[in-house]
Length: 559
Ligand code: ARG
Image 1 (cartoon, rainbow, N blue to C red):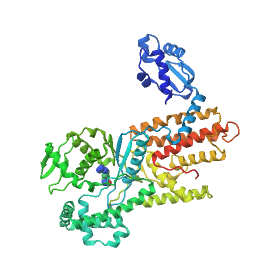
Image 2 (cartoon, rainbow, N blue to C red):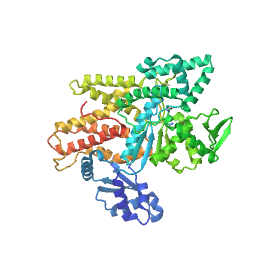
Image 3 (spheres, helix red, strand yellow):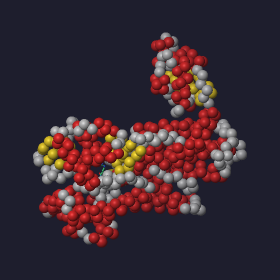
């Protein structure tokens, strides 16, 4: 909390000849119990300098300390415990939040650029649960980075290139129907792809045809390109529906195909730097402690890794990133280790700024949700169902609500996103619409509902901050809320450093719980202290809304 610094500064006045401000900052802790104050400084390490017991050092320091933000400083068992002046700090905090509004906790915009590779589904294949996780986690990380002053470039690295498109072209030419594909592109293209594999088991020459078709595609054959382009457009249309429902936008859709004519220079560069080795007719780069990175197959075609190398170099040239994130499932960890290692061998120092942000799986009844073997979970269906369940909830709880459909949308989608982000990303998560949509418990709707409750209090109380009156927060129940509000900047900072939106989700749950407790014990709308209490309510509302925004979730005023 920011008052830690002031505490440290006051300690410097007394023990500055022994410890630096930084050392003091590292030592200050949160007391085990609220009854012991808000900040504690342990004196055990000082015993050897003063040749006194920690107890008497603590007493001595406490008697000399001048700290205007404290109402009490108390030596207890070798600690200097500080009780902050609740009223003064509450007032300062609330004024700060209500003046800065959604800018509260934002850092100034810098010229530091962060590229983020997120979502990145594969053309002609269903948008999987893994892609949903990448989309949701990536979007939140992008929003958090912007809050931290980064200029963020959101890149959807579409899987739109590779041998599978050769196979698809062969399959379409043999069995495809234009109208069917137009009607429901991904379903139809997937069926063709599955059929290709079945037939190829009986007739392996099909695989050769597939490879040949991809080679033609890579060499720019007109007819092959035409088909590929069409598959891509139709698939993208379906993906765009999902992005629209989730409220997510991208700065670039440069997928794997975009790097088609940017790979030869990379291969050439690897060759010139003496890194390219021949192995069974293929070309590889050896990387320490990892399997070699395959760059070129023996038939001359390129690979996923080749395209990622080209993409990394392109992104550095184009955007001059200081950070470059890849939000991609855990199963690709080796791939990214190889890519980063090859770039390092090429001598690119900027690869230090690159990071793979892995995540776990979504399970259904404890099992992986798979798109293979036709067991397709259509994400659009899932979203639709979440929205209709949310609508049902609203019909029961608040049948007179205006804009029911809009709110149901915000709640249904919010529920899906929150359910994902409240878990540490590497954990596998169980998929359950029922759980996601509950209004109580650790859900998105619960946080949204708390926000709406705050909004309704402000409306009932006719609250306007601009008509400012004297602010005095006396309620002791308010203090835990104030402390949470104060910690928002730190929470964001930590979420950024750990690339972990779940810290923001947990913070939102904490503040919602705290606020609902306050609501249950304090009569907010009573004449007495009305303005001050509503000011607290309004600060909570501002922070809840901004926190939800950082997760990519909307905060309806009513629900
Ligand atoms: N399309 C890939 C997949 O679905 C993910 C791509 C991730 N991004 C990247 N630069 N490799 O598995």
